[in-house]
Length: 635
Image (cartoon, rainbow, N blue to C red; front, side):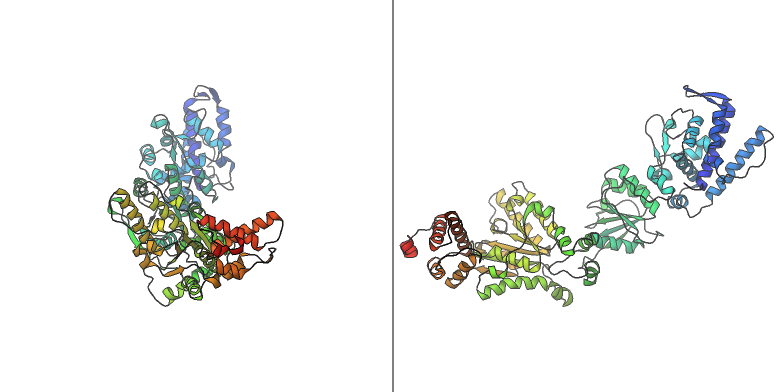
């Protein structure tokens, strides 16, 4: 521990005085708590073993005392010298802590003695001797007034509403009558007082300390509201005059609250609580802890009935988009297709060792994976066979995503209702709707999430909306393409209300309308019939593409791409297949795959016979009639 500090010297001086006077009253041999005899030589040895007695920092002796009164005066003089030194504040941890906690002189002396006891077993054994305790765990409440010689003032310093208790600098046991309850200093403060900067293990999870200049003068309470957490923290820093904040969610126990208060006092920082609503516990701790500046960070303004009864200032955050320079400073580039929020950029900055693309991909992991199927794009433009005009419409979705920053932020166009992109791909099954969405995701370097309606839709009222909100929140800005396959199920037309079921189905549709207006990402709806989609959604759709069944030339191209170059092809008349069989692209690919399995089982190359077998199976699956006009000699 190095040289003794003023608070340790003071503690040793008062403990030594109290032990000597106790020995004078009890005589040369006493029994402590009826279990062990304590000799005069034991006390003398313990007094000689105090850190003060061993240290060169001990006050100079005033000579040999001629009488007992002279000895008492010498001891009192040593205590007075130590007290004067204690109250001459220095730049050490002890002085900074008691100043931050705004302790009066008596509270400072109580804290000094209790802190010193925790570091030295000799002090603890002497305290046990002084308070007639054979197995001391700390100082008793009743022992401290006589120890310091300030009876009423010391008890006031230990009272439930004292500065020491409000600053959470001491713990008092709750067992037994008040006089025998044990007073101790929390372990984290012991380490802080000797210069250790370790975090208090009782802090709430996800507590983050932000560096900055020491706190000087800040409002007692600052209210900040806005949609983005980092923007709120930035606004709080401007209001309180320092970025030295301790941000955390609301503590769940008094132990966590106390650790938070102590940490703020030790670090001379502002506590920023990130909560949805202000609970009774938040109000109680903010009102009780007067020496810590508080920031309450919420998404929405705080209602009057929830406000703590203390003076406050308020700041509303502008949730504008990130500047390119902010993103470049962290990632080195502005990722195409991603509209990162300040909070997401902050998360990425904490994991700089991960490649930015992988880190961005992980932003949407976890919660979204529970509600949707992640698809890593593998399809390319060569896999999609569409008429040139419709292919251009699909490409327009990519253009809208890539150029949002230019149009909305630099050119000044208003994103009405939001900067998000909503596309509708309508057409028969197998015409390339989902494949197009996958190609778009691949071109933008994004993951595609195909929404699992079974995980979203619930029979319980309100649960579907909650699941949808979880999904949109997880996907927000994380750089993903959300695909609602068979979107009619959740985006269908609202109907006339004839029963409660209709009413709540309409509520779900209305909720989706509102949520899409605030969503900044890319959403693709696929439907077999666009007429099934509610007209209110159609007004909000930016790009709508109809996917018809392919014509003969398009079918020919699909047939040729359905067989890989590495497949062992025999004589296959692709022109005849394209002319005879009016299939969607999905059915063509399935028929080709069925033919491949048949050829593999026969141990031969792919032939027209195998392909016709695959086509026949598709006809049977689709419920279509096999006719000689189409199959000809292959009937």
